[in-house]
Image (tube, rainbow, N blue to C red; front, top):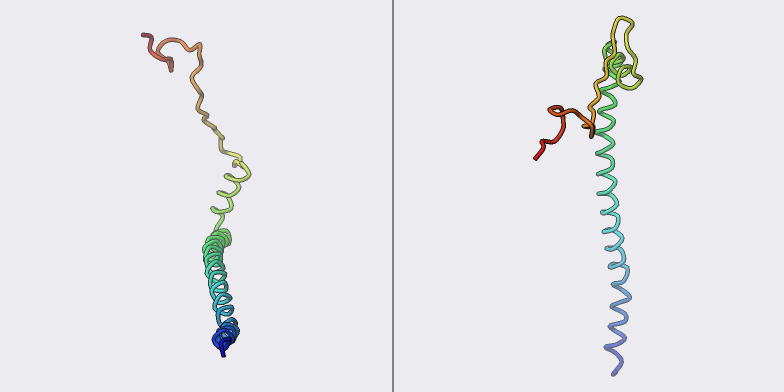
Length: 103
């Protein structure tokens, strides 16, 4: 009779263990679903952007020319390519050109 509460406690714990374990599994599954939905949304945005690029390429020649210019550095036959580069000030620069004022 003295051990009856202990045995009842053990039986109750054994009966509730599947419920607690199932709740933990459901919680983990919900976290995985949320992460996957976020990844899917990012891919949906990326696919929409790619679909827009595909439509631009199908509809006209301007998108093809733009990609050729930007990615391949191509120039038309009657065009002149000019590249402007910024230069750092040189230490021997004459006065009045990018030199620091004398003090």
